[in-house]
Image (cartoon, rainbow, N blue to C red; front, side):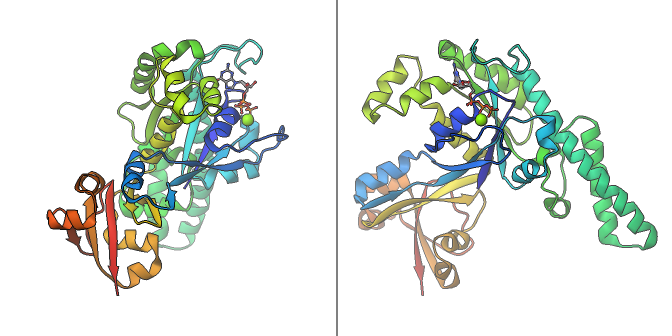
Length: 357
Ligand SMILES: Nc1nc2c(ncn2[C@@H]2O[C@H](COP(=O)(O)OP(=O)(O)OP(=O)(O)O)[C@@H](O)[C@H]2O)c(=O)[nH]1
Ligand SMILES: [Mg+2]
């Protein structure tokens, strides 16, 4: 799962990318290629389970992030830039709220709502071009022959065009599962889930809750596929230099509780429609990503293809019940360990043991 960090020039994308992934990004000025790195998805449940099982290894879920150069109309005309945007699963759109006289904002003034709209506009404009090109071809083809598949495609593309012309991103368009299949190959930019990342100055942390709710109402409320989170890049970059036990104190001095990076990654995860199940043992405790609504057999296949092929049953228990019981045999004795079949809908935080032939 890959998320592209996008936004106008000089809003703090690369700074956030470095903190998120620990990957340096020197010497990439002027390139339109994305830099890739991975971030761990923070998971207290995994920590608690590792406390119980004392495994040699603890493996969290990781998400891939791509640091993109500042998004401009020119960049959007660059095929390699567009290509790297099309293939991602989601966007994290960095919006600048921090003041810094040494690095001017491209527009001269700070206005996150304006910047948000500017990028949304570029995404939609690009999609509209793709839609119109395809529609032209389709009309020609449909004049020559009748084809129900092609006319279904034309119908849904007309709906897309209508939506875009109303200034409405494609993530808000309701389509049937069949239509959604027809659209998948286009990898429309405005159809991807997007997280607004408000990058605050150090002096704004006390107002963070108020700023968050303001932009949540303005950008995300009532909209599908949009999330809002706030970070403070400069505090976060200090934070990664500190020992874990010093972090809490440092955050508290800014009236903050949880690291903004943890919130950012968790928010991306939710927006991607992912939940985690866990596997445990004295060798490894591990969190696994899976689509919300996936079944036990899909979970088994994520761990090992053989587990899915020779699936018999899954033992399932919520992580907290397992921790509170103190182990599998205790949980089994207490009757809180369940036996589930292939079609069981995995829940976030389930610990699963696969029985296979
Ligand atoms: N005060 C402050 N400065 C920041 C913050 N984040 C980034 N900066 C500064 O802003 C400038 C731009 O940061 P980058 O992370 O390179 O921004 P970018 O969005 O990647 O820029 P482009 O890739 O050129 O579009 C740098 O000088 C950073 O030091 C922040 O949270 N607070
Ligand atoms: Mg950058």
